[in-house]
Image 1 (spheres, rainbow, N blue to C red):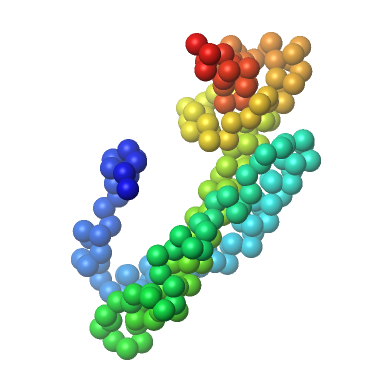
Image 2 (cartoon, rainbow, N blue to C red):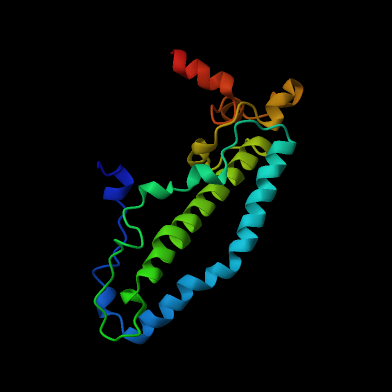
Length: 181
């Protein structure tokens, strides 16, 4: 498997520092990772509201949450083969196959998939309603659209700055021009 450029650069150091953190600090940190479970229903609701908003505006071919979730058969472990850690005390959750299965096949991939899908949907909404360039707008290119709201109305599109008018992220005519060059 080839590492992507961002996987090689911009690396966060955590493994080098983990054992230097006091156990009580790591224990509190473990609680913090599970508290967001309380927000998941609201994130699901927000994502689906964005999804249905896009459909009601006429969007076609919008990716679904399923597109962001890994297929079950791609997970390396199942309950029978799940590895566990050797814990320093019997009550350690790291010694439980169920703990790792719930984390690694449900909580983590669903959370990551949900947030990536939600980000994609928000970018689609942004690209449709606000085709105005800013410092990080090029990061929205994974949510390309055919035409922004402004591009639908030619008399209003001419009011856009030329870079906004011709941005291939929200103007497919410009994308096709660039491909043919």
